[in-house]
Image 1 (tube, helix red, strand yellow):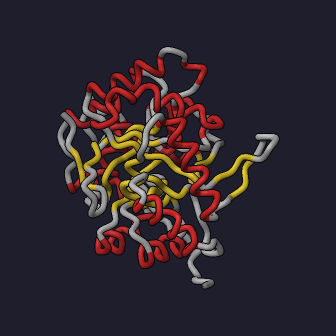
Image 2: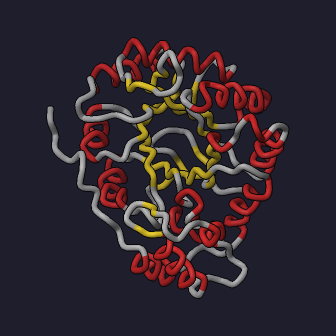
Image 3: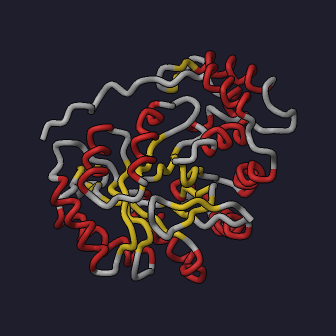
Length: 308
């Protein structure tokens, strides 16, 4: 079975590969059930959704598919985004009143009476953060939430929550193509706060599918052509039978502050490829250093000043 890592200082131990439920969709039909069943069979116990996904449909599906194994899994969801009446956009609403009302709707859709990890789905330094923290603490004291965290890459927001709340985790976009979060890793590790990595394969740019993409497209500062060129060099560094996706996941998990790498899958085959990562040798330090040289870390310049 898959190794597990502790989330923060909590008693939650997540599978090293988490499942990003956003990849499930109505168009997949019965394949959704097969994907989730396969994840469970191979030891994945961390499932991450949000009230924003497909107007709540995603939470409803996950609630239905995981109902019978509820005690055996870590159910994580997120809140703070409020759909407009026309449902063509959403507004950010981190108020205590909205957080608590939205949370109750998540419970209903997920068919459960508690959430293992409830996460704030965004946030800026201008938010009423003390009020938001109060909402999360009350949900914990009411026995509705076991632990909470935030989903953000903004340094000033992350540091405020790390200093003033009981967050156990920070979900951040993190991959070989986006190493900006690394500057926060030592700080978060010292605080006993885990990182939950989302987007570990960078929208497919760190998989074999990268060579099918338009070389003129971009991912952050990288051009598609540049990524494709670098991946050709990566192939010469790794075992012949290792997939690029697996290399990307191994790199993420080479950092001890990472509790789980959350990857989606829109087919059983794609999920199994991700799972196979954990049946192959760990990444060597030499390979990791060469990858870091090939994909240098960038500096996240925004959201650094404390405005409070």
